[in-house]
Length: 166
Image 1 (cartoon, rainbow, N blue to C red):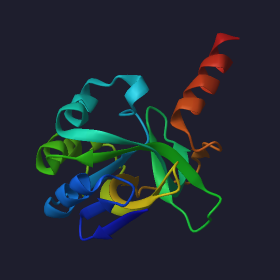
Image 2: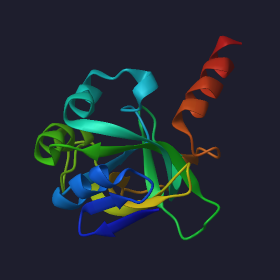
Image 3: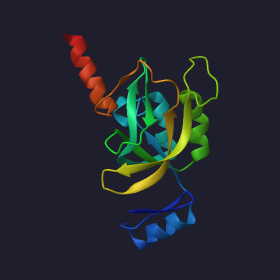
C-alpha cells in the first residue's frame, strides 16, 4: 500500500531508510497509457527516463478511445472499465510537465479541436497498491469514436497490425 499525504508517498514494504527518504521528499506521479509507453521508444519519453523513475505497470478506471492518429482515456464510473499503462515517480515534475504539456496539448483551446487535460487520478498498480497520479485525460467528444475494449494501447497496436497485414 502507498500512503499518500499531499503528493508525498511512503511505500510500506521498503526498508526504513528508504521510507524516511520518501517522507522528506515531495514526489509526484505520472500515469501514461499511450505513445509514451516504454516499449514504444518515443523520443518524448526521454524526459521520463532522465527526470523520473518507473514504478511499474498500473491501470486507471477509464475507457480508452481510438481517436485516429492517437488515443484518449476518458474517466468512467464503471469499475470494469480499465486503461492499462505505466506509473512513474517524478524526480523533477516541473521539467517533465514543461516538456509533456505541449506534447500532450494540455491547452484549453487547440488547433485540433480536441482537449486533453492533465488531472490527478487514482491509479491501481499490478501489485494491488494504489496511488494518486497525474494523467492526461481526454475531455473532447467521444461521439462516433471507437472504444478500445482491452484498454491496453500495446494490445490495440498489435491487433491493428495483424489486421493490416491481411
